Length: 294
Image (cartoon, rainbow, N blue to C red; front, side, top):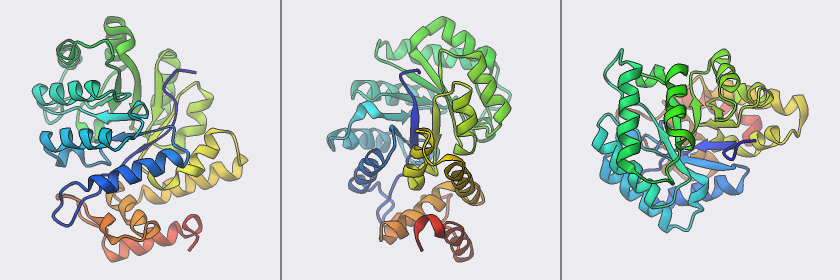
């Protein structure tokens, strides 16, 4: 098995009433996840609303996570931005602080970009960081980013930069695509973005999942990863994921945390996201009532 594997939560980012980052609550949540079955966590990803935070806010968040005494070797940091200079400063800082690696979203906004352009973006970043400790998890989410990493591009990056390219997080939700990555790149850590595909990905030699819903289902997902609970646990895990997919992930996860953590402050999101309306909240909590022991 590759060195990067397991159940990883794509962590949400908690906010105070003024929508500044609640660093203390984030540290507490990350510690909870790492103590509740997660092999690791991802900060500043899509679920973490990273693109609603400024570069300075993201740098401070990394600093504060490191200062909280959390095991940074079990934390990946999302550092991909539209501007090369922003990606470079964030990635360099993550490496300097000793984080396990970075989750690299390709430059977004411009559509129909070529593999050559995306390769050049990665090359400039890797050479700009210029540190042997850099490890990159390629973040393939073309539906959201408008650009993605083709198999040909992944192969070229691996051939050129070797161990710097450690894996791929495939958030397409397309089982055929994820399994093709497992088959074509057995030397990489291939993660699915949905635990719905976790059993098949593991069977194909994949590494595990990096998922938003793991924020609230970490113990169950870890049981499935460890081969415990049988078909009943797998079915229950898939059922919970299917329920959560019916709602925007960051608001939905935060709503659940507000109930399980007894703190309404968890529900805050930054515009353009909005909190789940009452009807959506009641539906989601009702669907998850068995897991939440309501």
